[in-house]
Image (cartoon, each protein chain N blue to C red):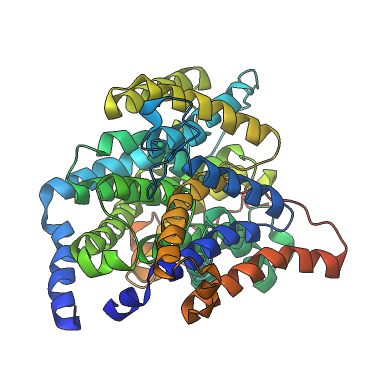
Amino acid sequence: MDLPSFAAVAIPAFFGIFTDPYLLGLILLTTVAGVIIGALPGLGATTGAALLLPFTLTMDPVYAITVLTTIYCSATFAGAITAILINTPGTPRRRPQRSTDFRWRSAVKPAARLGSRLSPPRLAGFSRSSPLPSARR
Amino acid sequence: MAQVAYQFRPPEYFALTLFGLAMLASISDGGAMKNLIGGIFGVWLATIGADQVTAVERFMFGNYELYEGLNFIPVMIGLFAMSELLVQSTKINQVIETIKMKAVQLPSWADYRKIRGTVARSCGIGTFIGILPAEGATVASMIGYSEAKRWSKNKHEFGKGAIEGVAGAETANNAATGGAMVPTLVLGIPGSATAAVIIVGLMVHGLRPGPYLFEQQVDKVYAIFGAMLAANIMFLVLGLYGAKAFARVTLVPRQILWPIVFALAIVGAYSLNQAMLDVYLVLIFGVVGFLMRRFGFAVAPVAIGLILGEMLETNLQNSLKMLDGKWWEIFTQPLAALFLILAFITIMRPFFTYMSSKTKTVPTPFNE
């Protein structure tokens, strides 16, 4: 397949995701589910994906893959919530930071993933502007 | 892309798969042997059932439900979900102390400026580690953290809630998910434990990851990319506005959570083929996974070995047929030879580092 015909298939497929309302709803639902799965102690991206695998079998292939990759991304993201709040072993971080760190969490990671798309000042617009917390020990 | 795909004939695939298996040794120096043992166990599991070429029955013990080999999905559910359940059940009496937390606050603009460099660095680190076959988010976050510490001006704050530490580890962690999809889709070698599960999901739908996927199923591949981008945008929004709510999820009692997981696992396995065998497989591999974890083995290499084992066997048989049974001719194919040499180096690397340092490194289990 040469490049133009490759692009002719690839580009509509890529943006097709953003124009299919059913698929977008599915992604939203699985993102919420994935974040919950990731935040639950003990459950993670792998366990969650393995548990949901049988339920994707009857779906259209594109939807099934979408569900699995969405669970993967969002549960990995949310795994940090458990890691920081209840210190699951295996994370390189130590005890004292739990409460202080959580506030950073939520915005730091997505900011990184989308680093090139959303500039820091733009992100800051989302946040409740607060002075640097003195609670940092 | 197409030309690359045509370069990959059975000998190349065989060497590539071997390289993927060898990468299990590089996950951590201390655990290299255990990861390889797990991988080989997975390859053995893949041989259960009828031989794909000669139809000889292997390890079936007269049970014809095993004729087509182990069903991957119940094995995955058993290894990952059921074994985790058993591990959690050993902690059921653990008292969880809750500490009061101030309202969730988001970082200020000054904080973003502070972590800008760390985020950019960890993004690169995470993507690169993710691309390496079999190395997942955990390794990426560890390296991201130590690099953030190395570059930071205020090292003493690390371990006490330094924002750079969190940013370094978590950016790498998240970037690794994208990177892990590269070997998964391009080569068919799982980039992480979760990617192994995703490969099983693809295979069930008749999509065989590998160079041919880009040739024949471009639309599906790009749908995956689009979905990952959409998911990332959505959890950016969810993370910003729902962090407080999601933090409460961690307080769900184990006594309620794990019975639900158990029910989901069993129902899910049974619903595949309405076969009790799948349910037994979940239970058996749950116990196997639990025992492995108790003895310091990680379960992910088994899953990766199981997926690669099938590829390995089919491609070896096909290349033997192609080369008229002269197996040494695999080494004369340039691309195959390259991957075999890479595989050899990867396997031997832990021994070399061990010999040169003579200090025992602390094993870090491959766990996601």
